[in-house]
Image (tube, rainbow, N blue to C red; front, side, top):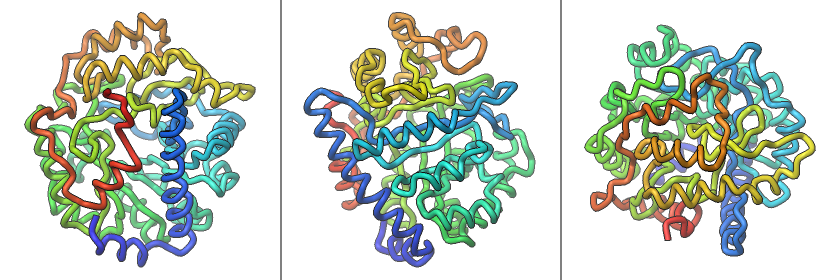
Length: 397
């Protein structure tokens, strides 16, 4: 992040969304992490940043996607979503990632966001349904950012997502957000076939011209009905990706986000730290969106925080993942992860037939633990933010 980014962000975002971003996400986010660290010191783990999949509806069938669509579609009851948000608010957590499927197909999305003006919502979307009307409503509410999935340029997007018009429609969604002056992000799952397109200065410069304020890069994790493990990055590519992210943070007028390395460049797993876990549309609590096994389920009459705090499965998973190493246990130890899930009597939670057999058949793939080749953050501001407000927290001893 550079001074030019902050000037651009302040100039391009409308006053209410800017104020809500600074207060609901920024200031309250810092307080949520401080609360999380205090709780952790006394042996209590309640995520600071819960992620919730509100529906399994989707208009696309992307390669490597963990979501299994159902007929009829599965939507989280709005009463349960409301209760979950209120429960986390009660302990000072106000940021929620809303996933799908495609969350813009969730019938109650706008009304839920409107009912919780003190919270902040990051909507993970493919952008196709980001109409001018929706973007205008997001501006009116102010407490929401659109995080748009971009999986490559025109040809690669069509190949990955099974729709030849998806890139143009996604870019139109971003343009609608830009025109309505709300915070815009682009998220990319980096794999072999989009590596050169997305990890390029040309791509970043084009995103800035389109009004994008932050880019979120993460490593492709083959999963779901069509996992395509041949697309997984090799270790050299992961190292190049890390170098690129660190270097571009110093140069570009855009925030470049990653969630898998700490301030020293050491690998971390947010689920192993407990700072984030995932709730699926059924209310089942999973370690993360890709690891689709659960022992605990939220109901409308649940003590939401108590379910998280008292979950033996989540506690055991955090210890298990940390003991497996600093990287991604899903990529690096799929068979061991399956054995752990069986030993915990965790139920498959994807809705896919044969899910329990998927992990043993997966090859072990490189994760983001670069060991002796770890690259520390070079951006002073980003390094400070990571060190003080995110990650680590003693999970690895």
